[in-house]
Image (tube, rainbow, N blue to C red; front, top):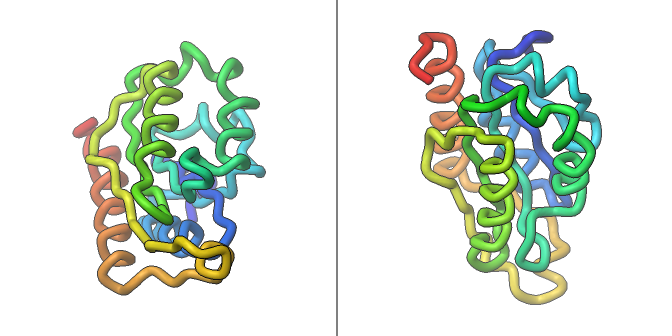
Length: 160
């Protein structure tokens, strides 16, 4: 992967689903995959676009992804305006709460959404289902690859 990526794929995962989807989306040479807890201000500033991938936990984005936004919000505020972004949410039910929260933060950074939100519902409702390892289907992973490729190619070609 590229050390100076055009597309930065930031992810957090508890059960493997978001990690697998992020890995699939980051398959382009112009993309870099980085865990939310490892993101530094320089990573965000040196990228031209972003793909945020995380699980929904208790109707919100995961705590690690929120912590990344909390620590990076002010250092990059005013520096990333207009940059494109997209998102993938691994949901146990509907994923809408996590998506709304992510969109509000992106609005504050004045990022530009360039793809519809991708919410993958794993229908995990019992404690055992919620805590179990999850593997997205090949169809879902193909959709993640397509999204990542489209974002990276759009950035390379100057579409966004």
